[in-house]
Length: 251
Image 1 (cartoon, rainbow, N blue to C red):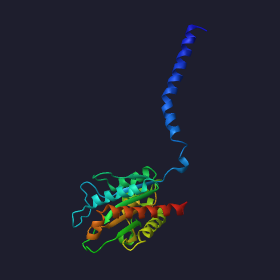
Image 2 (image 1 turned 180 degrees about the horizontal axis):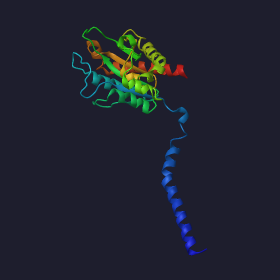
Image 3 (image 1 turned 90 degrees about the vertical axis):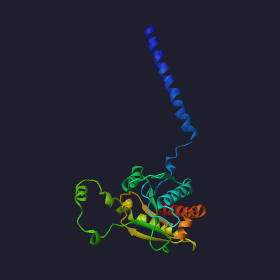
């Protein structure tokens, strides 16, 4: 064997050993994690705290802002969900996220559910309780029957128009809202109702999606609840149970 040939073999052997040492930590990490969990991968839930930044939303008599209440409730709900689901928030601090980006975030990560969190607001301070909405397209008689130019252009492509994406999930979204409402309404101190509405934040969601107004911030009792960690924890637990019911039904 020539010296040149020995030199080549030595270099190849060195490269192989180096590769083994470089790959070893990754192999150890995978082994430590145990078997692949692909078959039991957690479902992904995107929580969308409404408003943020310069967009305050509604305001309570004690100066509680909707944007703050929505984010705080989203954090409490995320805590309730995290052991059973993978939870992603569209915003984690006081900044504004536009409506299309909120929904696009859920679509991009192939989320299983999209839940937008808001509070109600009314000049009537007695208006209160939790309201849930699923997407329902506006009637053409009220909003006009002709699509605009951009909508017409979209329909000329192979892509589903943004405003039509949620339509195929409408029944599932309504069912999700019903399961959550059922859990919330199990005791007299909680009250929830459901409505269909053409909400822009829901229309492009390519998964079951609902918007929850977690009380009226303009109602003094509801505003107090939205600043009470015990109440928020209880409400979050009920919402989580409704989500569990929904997924059990769809298995």
